[in-house]
Picture (cartoon, one colour):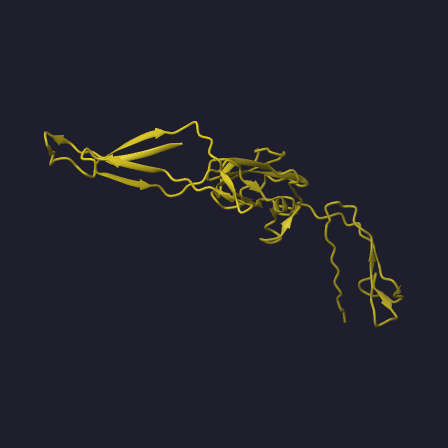
Length: 253
């Protein structure tokens, strides 16, 4: 542990104080206490509790008058921060083309990488987060590590013309706590950029419906004899990037 102590300079001439001395002028002393093995916690009532430590200084004048002052309490934090496994186990990327709050595995934006995470430290809190972006796990090919301070959401909107179709990009993170301990997280899932439309190979059928014999528009219109229900079956796309299907019913008069 290193401590800094300052005191006012007082000049003494004979038995009298020098009237020209500046009581506001201070000299900073630095000293270190080492070879300690201070525990960070203790058991109390069957619970693990953090230990508060205080540094106390006693000043003694030549006349024997003393004063004692203690520091604010401080903790010993000998553990690194923790990345929340529940958050980090899911998708940590946001496609700005699909919204600001929905985690995605695929994105349509050709210019932006946005990510979020959760890193915490119950002893000394988080003081800084850094993030990088690469084309490989742990890589920094697109962006070297940059600080976002204590924010745990970050965005880079400068990749227009750089992000490639059907290519994965990976975010890496560094989290630092108040005691100076750091932990790094390299995302291994990544986000896949898709800039082209999906393959149009989905086949649909309408159970119980028959082809219209008359000339109609559209030419593949069908008719159903049951006015109380309507259904549809369809084949799955061979495009592995398709992760959602939608259906709508439209009335044409």
